[in-house]
Image 1 (tube, rainbow, N blue to C red):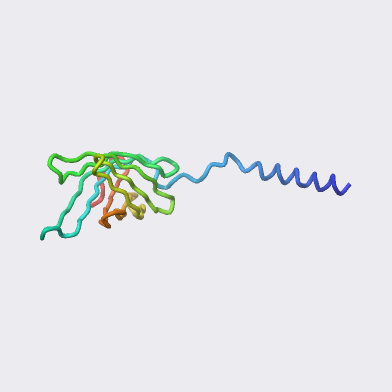
Image 2 (image 1 turned 45 degrees about the horizontal axis):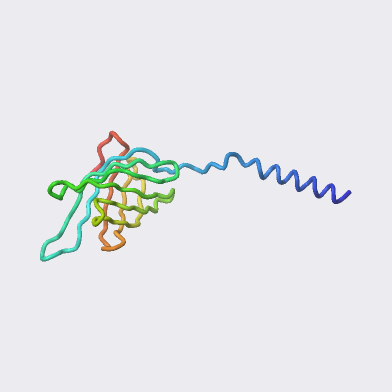
Length: 145
């Protein structure tokens, strides 16, 4: 009798544990389409500071995965590339930027949502140590400067 009772209890517990829903997680707070600016001030090289910057557009899905287009408007002509990565719910971010086979960058950093609802934050390039600053607004809005 105890054996059947124990099996019944285990079956009920198993059924309750299996009723946890669809297994969906909380969507990323960064989900959506974003447009904005990026800039980097590199160390002084040959007596002059090297700066780059331009525009970026991203689409971030519910899991925090993103992809988009990045333009370096300092280059002549402007260099257009792709950017992809992941931003976790806590704001930690990894990025990979590709302009060409020889011109690729990756890094890690932290993004957050400011009071205006914009993404602001930085990513440190894993090779050079340069810090890239991002300001992104929901698609269709102008980033707060």
